[in-house]
Image 1 (spheres, rainbow, N blue to C red):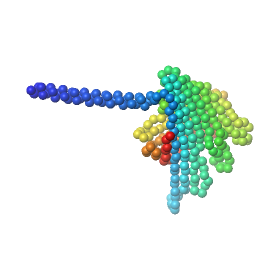
Image 2 (tube, one colour):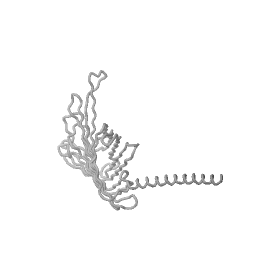
Image 3 (cartoon, helix red, strand yellow):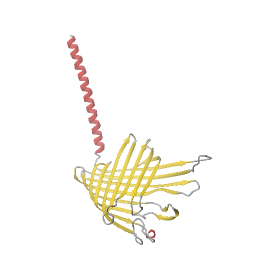
Image 4 (cartoon, rainbow, N blue to C red):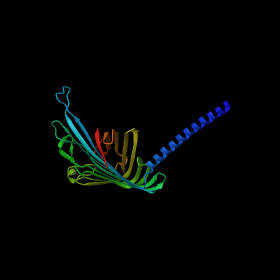
Length: 297
């Protein structure tokens, strides 16, 4: 009787253990299947946009330690419209940002201003490789002024305007990780003649309104989760001109970190650095941080 009872007990525990293992395996397979479904999005168009408004404010009243009251705001729109099928991928991304700041006793000043559109078309080659063609356009909304003399205008809408386009090869692991290499890239810079009247501007020679370059471009995109509700987006663009100073490489790198509070609120940090010796002999940098109000569409 004891042997029967002992055997029954062992069988019960073994069945329970096996059932738990089976449940864990089933749960794991279910989670993997859900993740795979999320990664393997159905064919067709996918569109999504986000409007963000950042606000920063500082106020000092009889503050003996000193300080200057200020208020600044930054509005931005990001819109993606992408197409996917078994053999084609077409990613389109539009950025638009504009920001102003007001220091006590001083006029309004621009803190951020850019318009950028990227389009990347890929035809399946093998595995994660695609034959590709890309197009990039950059300009600004408003006038820019010389930091040393706020009365001298140095840029305005569509001046300068940058265009890049060319064929290449795309390695695309996912929508969040991809690299495009384009060894035959055309680049066009357009600027109004009144900026080149007395000398060159943005690489365009004196008295002219455009500059053509031919070279190689490498564009990379990587977005990942730093931790729960915190994402980091990296955008890197490299370009070298075969026709002049081929050893020089233009660099444009952007880091966007979003710390999500809820559906509508987040803390946003953006850092961008540009090196283009035709425009400026050194690195240009831009940083924006603030509490954001977000609206998805």
